[in-house]
Image (cartoon, rainbow, N blue to C red; front, side):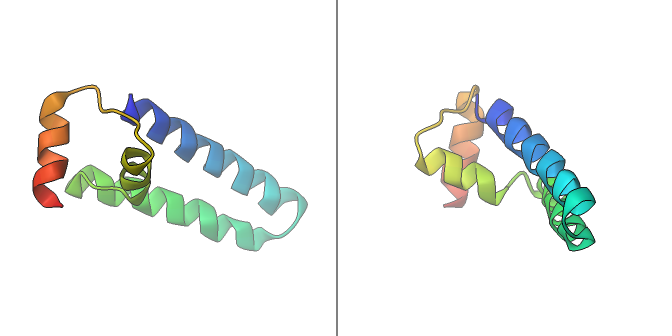
Length: 74
């Protein structure tokens, strides 16, 4: 469940920042790059700031093994 939220939020952020870059200022592409870099680092570390936020909001992970791994790091 948390993975679906994470992908949805990341996709939303990318689309909104691209639209803002097109209609407002190209500096919004820096936010797009930030989201991309966070996704890339989370692929290697299995940790993402948005995942921590979603967990604090009570969104559950689909696999209990994932929750145990995250709990061990905290």
